[in-house]
Length: 151
Length: 163
Image 1 (tube, rainbow over the protein chains, first blue to last red):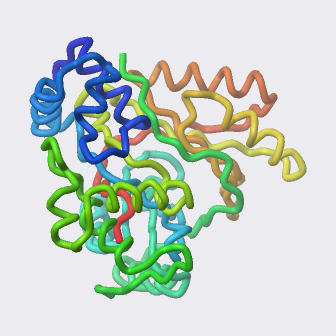
Image 2 (cartoon, rainbow over the protein chains, first blue to last red; image 1 turned 180 degrees about the horizontal axis):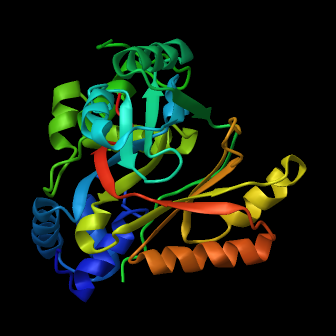
């Protein structure tokens, strides 16, 4: 587990949603938080190296760049889990893939250029594994806004 | 696997696409993180920043900022709460659920034979107990009692949407 002091937390809580779009964003960020640019960069380098920050960049809205996305549920027998997870992860179109033990236990999100490609991937996965892949596309979106309240 | 496909969007040109591709894995942690991209594309840093700002305004990017390795900092509980909501109530209930700050995602999805749950909410927190407590509060304020919490036990993959 990565140790965070109060300053780290303040930086992390800010840069999730209020990263300044500026030619010198870290300087600007430091002005707001009253921390020097150098200290911000030093802290962020450690936080990124240790994994508290995965990256600083754009979160792309798949639906607006001409693609489509969905959530897929599968009932995978215990002994097949690793193998099936590997098959799923092979696709660049898979953005998240989790084991969530329940009626359906493997859940992954697919994001592709079009619906046809989604169907193609699901067909291939069914053929490889003999399992049913339940496609649960979004009917209505009420919220998307991952923001962690780091405390 | 298809590669090198281009996403044609009316509001976005090839330069925008190149900026997204150059930044999607993260900008460098330097004083001028956009300098290198600007030089490569023959733009000024101001132009790069302005294009990113416009893509955000147009909704091509949802946000520009840090993606957090939430597990590594202790936010280890991650529950997908699924709810069986009467069809006619989805609009109202979906809005109420989305208004909870602990809910990071809220979607309506189709039911499936043997799977009656049609509203999906994601809740992230430090403990499973926290997540259960949030779900109980959501249940109380919406009156929806048929729900399950699916905790993630293993993360096989997490990359975010990539071009």
